[in-house]
Image 1: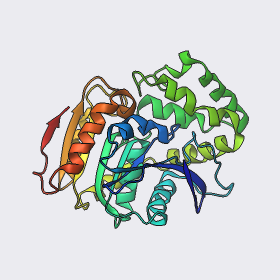
Image 2: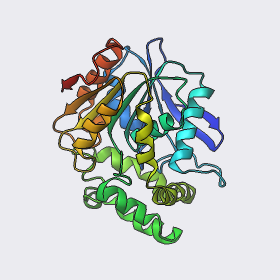
Image 3: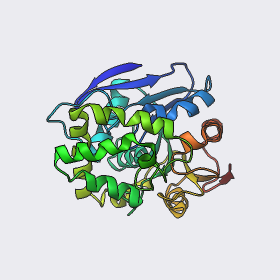
Image 4: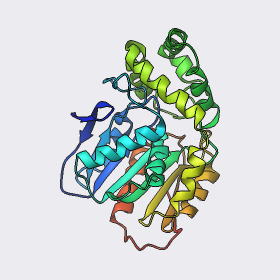
Length: 291
């Protein structure tokens, strides 16, 4: 585990090293870099995988008390992270809210270090906050801090974590990871403070991804959209629509998975991303692959 000081505070990140293509992997709300462990293992030796733990509720290093933590600001931290590590020709991949962050990086025009984009079942268009799961989480962010902490204590129970309003519709088989992710939130009031700051600004910026979608057509590099065909939070139609917005976009549909494909189908996702990284950048726009 490595760490780096950014403008909002210090974050941890995994870095496999190596000389292959650079793949930066972004997670969603109430998750950390371990979301990508199975995918990273499947890509071993083929590329340099870097997975930061962003301040989205499962981080163990609280941010500065005055840090801005809106999703747009966190997207800015992603761009700052790429700059501080002096990364170039990056493939920027995001799942769940991580995919929203990747879109916001593109919308802000901070793509001088980004060569390719991978969006994996993620928030898009008007599905923000996404589905009943996202709306429920944002609603809890409006609670006073003490009540928010008490409400989240229920997540210690597997039965609660598996509810559709929690992680139940996000992953079929990743409960061990979700139990681990919520510990910092339950144990540290400063982590809860950081998450509440993000949730409250997300509620006030519901149009962020509609605006970001308009910018995706300006991204000139190859783009891969990977979507769970049985997703109950991120509409599969959004995957097809996103792939069509990129000048060089292609779509992969993955079966037997919910939103968190890196947990439910890591080997499949690793194979698909590996093929994408090896593919000719001039592949036919809109080519459709089937996992």
